[in-house]
Image (cartoon, rainbow, N blue to C red; front, top):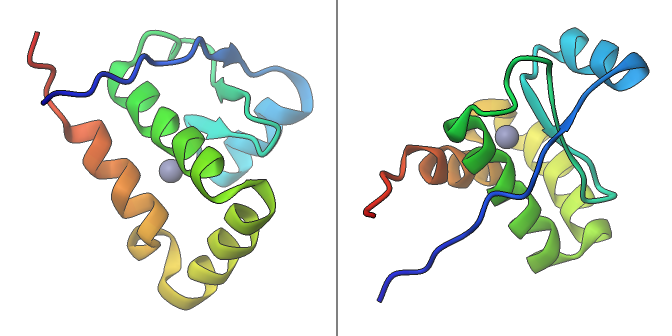
Length: 99
Ligand SMILES: [Zn+2]
């Protein structure tokens, strides 16, 4: 069985959100209000969109509050790279399309 996750349409980040993302070094950012933002020029970056779509799935799976609490807890506990949410999102980004 193969499941297909359609990448949601990203919003191009502007203003304060673009500033915040550049400050953090993010090319893409999934907000807890469930909008995916990408920096200008990254709107068609499939890898990035798969990564952010996975975060959206995690938010829907765990709920916004639990996701935020767990994300921050894991960030302190494991750091950004080993944060289980990030590990899962990176794995999703690496998935090769089979169609
Ligand atoms: Zn991520």
